[in-house]
Image (tube, rainbow, N blue to C red; front, top):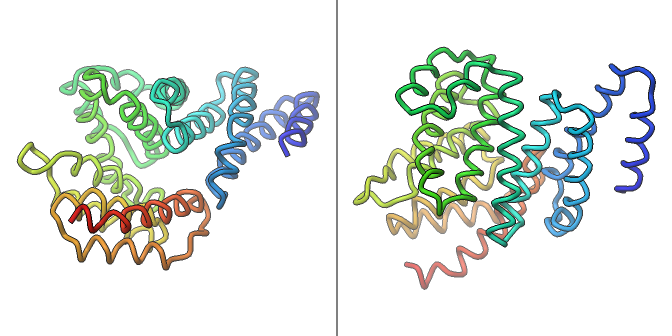
Length: 282
């Protein structure tokens, strides 16, 4: 399949019409990312994605000012790093690349956020009020990659210090369009609110509200929302009945859904692991 894609790429690159070439390669970049997310065999994705990463790199090198290609690269590198790479150093390298692509795309699409994302919180936060609903797609894509970068660099306090800005950006996205990507911003906010126990400043009840809203907005199709709800909230507060109920619902649900199939398949695998370890945990 990779050879076929490379052949199509050669054809598109040799086309004399630059606008057609740009459209074709942008579609290819997006389709590669979507194909990964719609795959129901994680091992196929694990084995095949490195070739796609190189292909995305080539597309971006050919047109470095294409925000669509940069965002496709950010999405693919970020998903691969967070899902399949176990080596910490390698995950950091890939997450850093994802974030670099996202920053480049941000500065093409939104000069406001480009100018303040790396500023102190007291400068960053007021700027968010100027965002509009039209800014939501680039803002969410950037927040997604930013959060992945922090996750992969969790041993760096400079990275951890970025979390309040990521939280503020996600909260602004929810204010502007909470149903964007079927409520995924709520899911991120739920995780951020339940990273630490209440005694250390965590906000589990706030997290519960975000998890439940994410499930509602996705109409139950995002199975990872229920897995994270069980892992982050139910386990933290030792709510065994809720924990098992959520995970059993995940296992009886259909994994296939546009844009969520890979995540749902992984969610079902994680649900089995959490249920198997529940007696020891609770």
